[in-house]
Length: 151
Image (tube, rainbow, N blue to C red; front, side, top):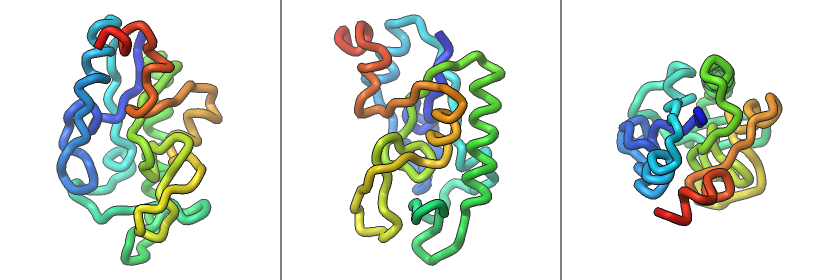
């Protein structure tokens, strides 16, 4: 099965700070299950650099701590991620928890105080609206139950 996966979770240095969010348990589960990871970084696809200022969702907008509105870049990245999912036949995605792009179920609240609120990132919202199942590195075992238990 082809699964759309946040590139940072696979070890790509595309996190806003320039680092990664490598999740060895996820990588192992994907390999054990014979799945093909389709890496995606919506922020980069939206035209943002790495590193880049941290951003958070503030209502329907995405803003940096300095107040710069980067919603258009996040929306462009979401559209590109959806296109990539469709081209590769992905019906599922494992994305970075709490991200303004990839968060699923919770995101940071826009105050840059590390406070989380219920909600989805821009990309997750677009993927869900298109019918994809989305989870994060925190709960991917619901998507890959057999593989995660063997990890």
